[in-house]
Image (cartoon, rainbow, N blue to C red):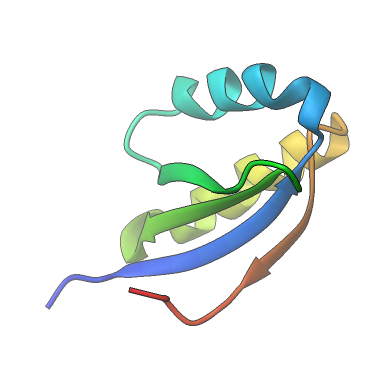
Length: 77
């Protein structure tokens, strides 16, 4: 059975649009949505086969100071 791996991260609120655009550039890496808009927390559903690429992309976006505090947690769904 295919399943998604669940992550959460904080996005710098004033750069949210740039972060979302950058992540969407990499098609089929993850499904993202806002978990808590006031705190800038996003959640990501990542296909198992894409996890390594997702982590590389998130590390790059973190180096650009667009995201921080990426954590892998149990899928809440």
